[in-house]
Amino acid sequence: AAPRPADTAPYSPSAEFFDLVAAEHTATSSVPAVAALLADADLSTGPVVDIGAGTGLVTEAVARARPDAEIIACEPSAGMRAVLTSRVFGDEDLRTRVTVTADTAPDLDLPDRISVVLLCGVLGHLDADARAGLWRRLNRRLAPGGLVVVELMQFERPTTLPETRLATATAGRQRYEWSFAGAPDETEDGVMRLHSTWRVYRDGAGQPEREVHDSYRWTPFALADVVAESGMAARTLPTRPGAPPLAVLTRTPDSAGPDVCEPAAGSRPPPARTAPEAPDGPHPTTGHVFFSSSTTDG
Picture 1 (cartoon, rainbow, N blue to C red):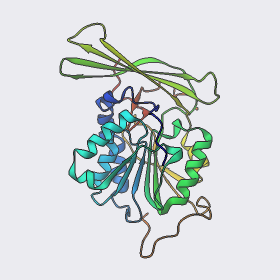
Picture 2 (picture 1 turned 90 degrees about the horizontal axis):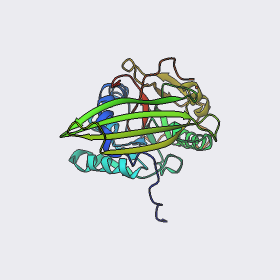
Picture 3 (picture 1 turned 45 degrees about the horizontal axis):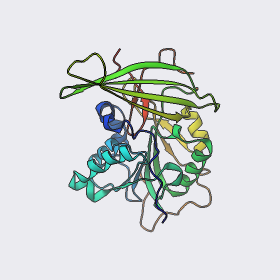
Picture 4 (picture 1 turned 135 degrees about the vertical axis):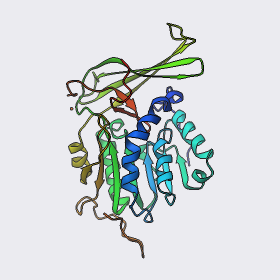
């Protein structure tokens, strides 16, 4: 195979800070909902594929909730993937069950059969053609009764988000502040540019000794748009108040198409955009961003 190009993915500049705020969110929002959903799911039909796994917070939680799960964790950002790989290598159990790849969503090397797909804070990074291609491939590879978990943002159309400090954290003698901003993209309709800034202060200083900036493209949309694009049926999952929308999709008879893999012998299916008037602040989730009020710091 040809060598991969150098990493140009977003999130690498700020990967070192990601878990400072994302860990609490996943522990109180997406992780409980996903763990409850997968508690009785039949994972024998194929691996769980975590697309845009970030630093591996949800990957690890799924592995803990389901000790029988094989997981493929895909993360194109070298910085985020370094944390993910360290998380996996540091745990003997995870090393036996989690495969880390650098695949991007449009070019995933997918297994023939998949039991569960996780798409947390990912879809908005893809343009319409890439999303359409991803849904076609997932519909063909998802096992009968398989599940797709999707986490979105809390705004459905491009809007202007003034820079706002959303979180602070301390480690040793340093204080970390995270700010976020966004605006409609001036060159693409229906698209936003999101901007994340981390400032590092030392020993109570009033001026930061370091600033790290990150910027990325995001297409906001609603769950109804996901249903229309995927051709799947959807239902929302319960999460804590203020958490980003979380839903599970299941294949419909018409969504699979003629190329869907048939069940393996002896296998069984699992059991069964304007922003809000006062939007809560965006925060990183597994590998990406979401809107939540839990850690807002005025």
